[in-house]
Amino acid sequence: SLTGQPTMLQNLPDFVGHALREQRAGLDQIVFNRLPLRDGHGTIAVTSGVFVDHGPLPVDCTADGEGVSPPLYWSGLPESATSVALIVEDADSPTPHPLVHAIAVGLPAQDGALRGGALADDSDAPADATLGRNSYLQHGWLPPDPPPGHGKHRYAFQVFALGGTEPLPEAPGRDALIALLESRAIASGMIVGTYERHDTTVSSAEAAAETAPPGATPA
Image 1 (spheres, rainbow, N blue to C red):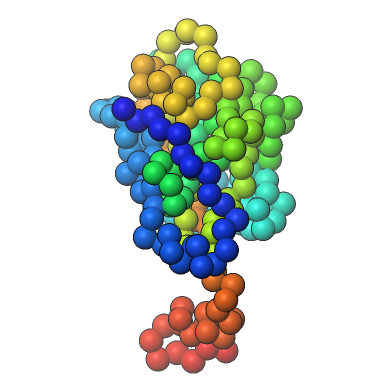
Image 2 (tube, one colour):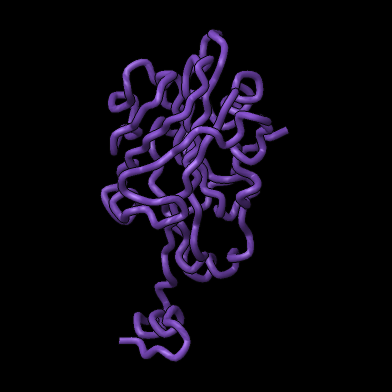
């Protein structure tokens, strides 16, 4: 089974981030990598206007800034698709299963887009779309808020094309979404954005020295 309820751990002090540095859910645990779709796996192209795949998320999309969800674009949906679903997971949360940052179902079955901030709450979501529950049981976007000193976190924005016309679940959590995808998903795509909170106990000079190329002198 792909299901599992994640433990909620965020806003942790530095020493906890260090202690949990090797504890990560893992990219192999995200829904995209656990859901076998055969020919449809990875065929949807997903992009964003504010970050590139495996590049850093803007601070404004995180808990350290405005905390708005980033814009997303997708293309390459199968002709037989009847709707689109989205889930955003933190593959590096120090939990048994990835932390869920957003879920949306009922998005139009066409090449489409979500504007920045569209996942804030139900009133901001596109027409006919329904926001599911994140790991804090809220309907909307949970801004990335990784523990300081825990290292880089990878946030997987996963898009799925669904077939069939059965009614969609209202405000699904991760388990309900996985059950839906297991029965109706026909194609998928993903883009990953990263974010890291550096150890606040390390001075800026020390941090620069740690990240500088060999032989370089930090400014």
